Image (cartoon, helix red, strand yellow):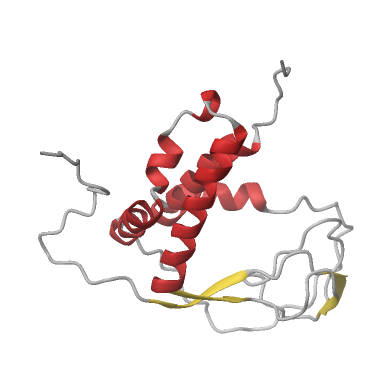
Length: 192
């Protein structure tokens, strides 16, 4: 018998990851909290002397747009239809053997991959191989590259690419009729 751990098991983390993914897509406040969790801890650095002020044009205010949940719900419905993702994450896996869970995970994986191929074009953010040494020069796009580890000083930064990152270069979700209730992720089924 295993002893309780303060870290969730892999199979407990799977539904957590999917739940966090969809909550991040549909809830801007939740996404902001996740983003704060993923920011690297920065070692204190002595402040640089303040540069002389340079007159700049007034920056445009940041306009936040409300994310509607319809696209996230539509994607979740597609993942349920093709991969039975909701069924998988709602199942209590504690009583199942690892081999059974692995077999179910294979079906979920294949269905999720089918949805990704059919409705999205996904490409790597960086083209270098993972493990490559790269240099990030001043002005690199921090939305595309997140620095981790001992982040001190300013660019250029030299480090090892631990993950290439992903971006969606196209999204092809089906159009929905005005009467479609996106909250119904999978209708109940009644066999006659």
